[in-house]
Length: 332
Image 1 (cartoon, rainbow, N blue to C red):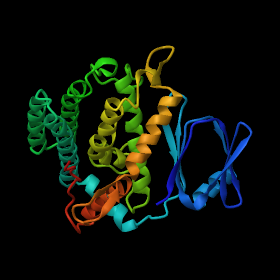
Image 2 (cartoon, rainbow, N blue to C red):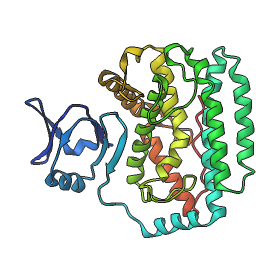
Image 3 (cartoon, rainbow, N blue to C red):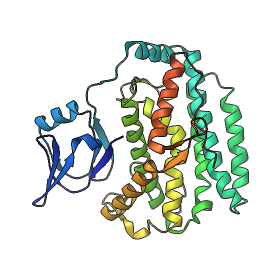
Image 4 (cartoon, one colour):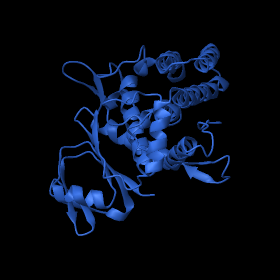
């Protein structure tokens, strides 16, 4: 599995023979193409058609973020794993309301159960106030399995996540990282800025792993397939955000790796990570994805990035009716 390249400074991306060249401030850095899977571009970077053709040939995905670190879009090379049988089966599961509902309920159940596991970890560490929130999540979990419509499921997911977020100030101790309430575009405080930024990284990381399967990321089951470019990655992200995003946020705050000084305000409102803050979070995110756990079925260690791709393969087996999909459940 190749590496991810994160570009924060401004400069130029070029092809030099079979190598990626980054030119910035008079310096050149060479990156072998065979070890690169994705490039995350945060700086003002120039590139040309020849470079994009090079990325297409080598199946390198480019993710673009604006100067406020909002995700803007992905250069997605032509699909090289397309399978007519899988895409037809995926579309049929989306159009058949009963089949779609089964998958949508599984995404909700997986998300809520992983939220509960995160909270149980902190309950065991002496936060008794979290117990009532866990009970509420149990109720939302049971309620989601009785619903007959996607809109109702989405409403339950939103209510469950709001209840889950109410535990964040208990876990972090509030202070400079008090949440108060979830705010987006722009985030109104430091904790919301962390959540929004890491959620974006989670969405595009999952998108890149879907690209390596036969699935079509444009056809989702929980999130509505409409004029948005991608939706399946949003579905799978519901399962992984508690595991990857939220646990990482708590670790960064509680270990004081990220501090109030790593944020800045914006004219017109909103709080955002500073360049130093972005560097800290990106390094921690990449370390998290590369870290490994013992897989309960395979009985061997796999990275979190590999775990995401395996989740997509499980979904692929489900829509081909080879094996019923069961969302990944964190056990620690």
